Length: 243
Image (cartoon, rainbow, N blue to C red; front, side, top):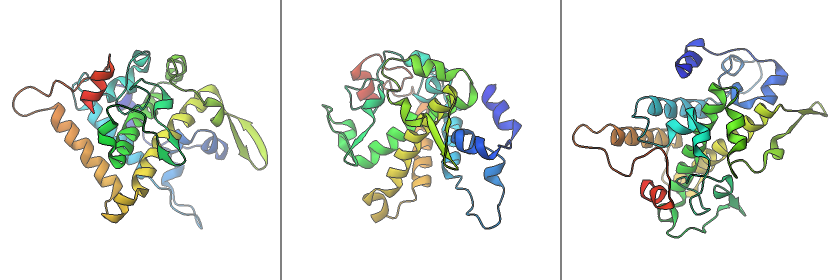
């Protein structure tokens, strides 16, 4: 119900300071949807992708994919594994990182055959649901902080510089900014990947079609859904099978 309430309430206004402190809420703010004279129109493509992820989560059995738990019960992820993590598939943020602008490649077997474009898409889909958890529950950041090795570099998002002044974010805003930075960065890297550009792939459309294909798998017209589809990955093998 909380997700429907959030969307039904519609865009809410933000102060100029809040727009900088809380980029996550800015995506769904009234300000982002109002044209400002002389300013570039706000890019809503990532917000649209977030809504599509939420739609799949709400339109699928909650135990059939990794979205639902990350949105509504992030504390259950503590000590579990995660698809796409290059740290033995553990649900650690250090499993989703780049070195020298390249995704790390420490896993055996390789994640999704180490197809970089697919890995970038998966990484984005791992972090986007956590954006929703922060938006829909003002206390969800506590569970995210408490999960073992889940968010290791929160200090990176602690301070915002505005008009030459440093402004401290709240704990909730820090976690939201940290998660959004990862989700949006992987989505942007997908869009700028040479293969995406060479094949003239519309990244927003591609990612949305990928979500639709996942929804079809979680809601099969005939027969049972694939056994690999699950919400919690107790073992590394579970995460690998899901990938």
